[in-house]
Length: 241
Image (cartoon, rainbow, N blue to C red; front, top):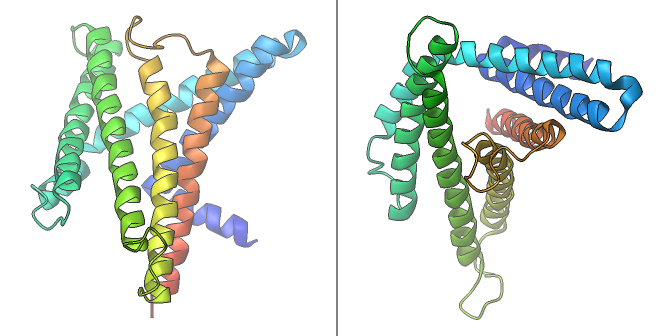
């Protein structure tokens, strides 16, 4: 019952609904791709699951038509990150925000071109939006890795052993932060693998992933994202008076 209540609560929020749709879509692509390639007797079921996956992906694309304002507010609030202690993290975040802000209108134009609302080259705009997403994921991965390294430096003493002068609560908080950043890194790398796959052929491994592998990478990323969201929710509840 608690699991059902948690699922219902997640579906009430836009982000929770998007995470669930994303996970379901990539899961359908993973299973459908495996059935089509490995189980000839179940190939028709696999093809139907791939259709469901494509429709769920299209659903998320339409829902993102309304994300620009929220992203703009976040970007405006962060600004140039003057409150950020680490200068490297600051500029990584600024560049990531710019890439994310530009991503949305590019994707909207690509969607409108596919829907014949605009008479422009849809492929060009899909490529541009995917390139911006790739850049954002790469910056996010570097940011997470840098943060892990910096936290490990705080945890280690001058002799290379773990610092004992830190209070236990502080040390546990830093270790939890490392775990969170490691999950973010893995999630970004899984998405980055797919993002490169969707770039024009000739760029690294672009166009070489079979459907099941795209589904696998997306499912891994989605599950990690859902786990982090659930973990953050539990932590917020624990911290609330």
